[in-house]
Image (cartoon, rainbow, N blue to C red; front, side, top):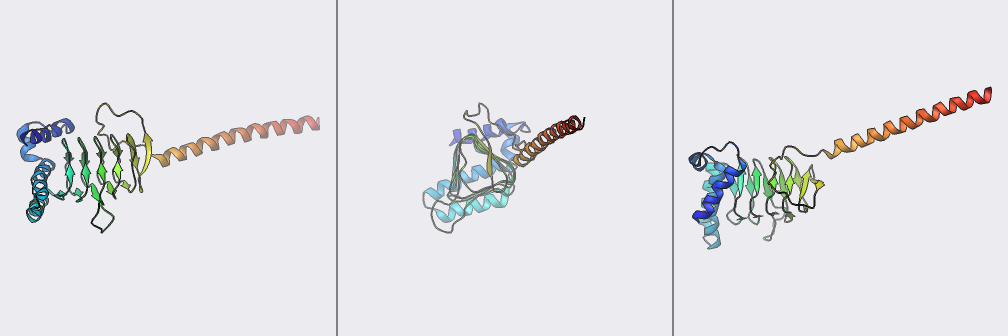
Length: 223
């Protein structure tokens, strides 16, 4: 248990350049507090102390502004940056070294008592305000842009943006170092518009060339 707590603290130092000291991290990081509360509530939940598990979870929500259901499964090195408004549902599964920013929802789309929340594999980064809705998997080393709404499977090593979320970039190689640049995302619509402008300019160039040839041909026929 002590090793897990130490890993949680190290995750803060690894992914937040504002962290200055261990004391500051332990006392002033609500994301870390929410994770530690969850470790306790999940332990109770697994031993069928359901009321106590929910009570600890509710206390954590009141103190941190982060709601993690005690039934959710969370791996090591989990980091919630700022954290206010984060919601993680009962059947959510989170791998190792996952990062969530404030306002993220790992939500369900069914009332049935089945797996209804997403699975995030290792090294996933979810940008602020993003919603991951449904019992599908977000693959390893993937990144979801801020305010995206993801409702279907995400392959490993992918970048997802938009509403609904769509893959705009995919690589075969995993990242050597965790990329936290969740604000720098490709803009597929801007790229599509840029391609259309390029095509229009090429059509204009061809039209002007044909018009010039036509004028020359008219002149030669008149001559």
